[in-house]
Image 1 (tube, rainbow, N blue to C red):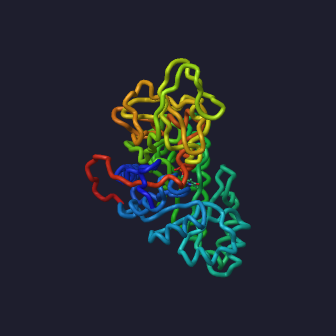
Image 2: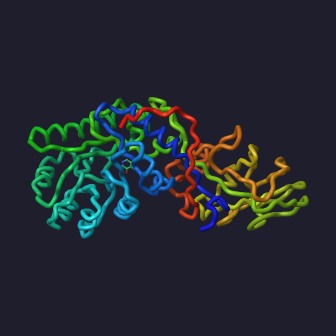
Image 3: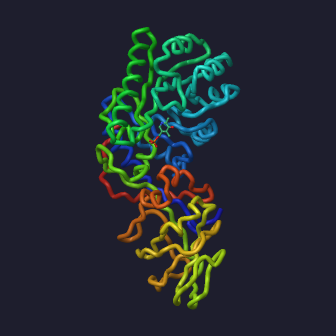
Length: 385
Ligand SMILES: *Cc1c(COP(=O)(O)O)cnc(C)c1O
């Protein structure tokens, strides 16, 4: 393989990741431990380097979206619990056992189909407390009894997911309270019936930011672990998190356009006066939204902000470097992250693109090598896990 910094790359600061994990752990209730959500290639950060570093920091539970993501972690030697949050076809039950993965039960039918394999399959029951995506309706006690009665299921945990916990609006806050009530109500009822729920979890990142510590055994953090909020809006408590990912590329070529000349597909950029343009080695196939130049996208080059111009290409884009006269082939360009005193935050970039950081980060292409580094100059915290 080539030098991974030869064209464009995802730079991942593993000490920032470790720092964030410790900060999040301190925001949880005693007895509640952080589960690292590393689905979608750890939100574009590289699932394996991310999980390895978190395991070294003491994290013992991971969550992924699907079977193959779980298998990939096991093949990389990750130990501890790995929970699959999404659907797995019942005929893959043998694979779940083979790789020691825990499956979410999506609804009663799914639970019955998994149980019918006669294995038993290790699972967590998802309870639907109002999101209406996955889960057994929390108030359907009869369904819970039927599921606990299945010999083919080894129920090791019960959890739910909050759907408006990112909002601080009154009606959303009361909906979240309603979800919590349904969840803890079901847990209490299970215990009263003599069923041990095992692991319990309901907070994701916004549940950690916006709710008081919860009396559960785990909290599932995704986006917060990567040091950014979804959309830059304020949260009830501000946690001292550090962005983990920077996105960088290089200048391939620099040229001067005479007044009136155009550049790129459709000649969508037109030079009104003499302009210096740099061609940058990253494009929409790398995961950048194609309309970013029209939405005011810019890059940092030698600490200067240079606007994107024209149409983004699949593998390249154009920036105006008229005011950065020293720009030269090979220079490092920052699409997201810091360069000198300047920063392009994931939150601002996502807002500019009309999306959230979760989408922006998780769509970064696998073509971009993950280059791990450790920069965050923070004192080492004692092990809290
Ligand atoms: C993706 C996901 C999470 C992580 O969400 P963040 O908001 O990124 O922390 C937690 N739980 C479930 C069920 C998920 O699907």
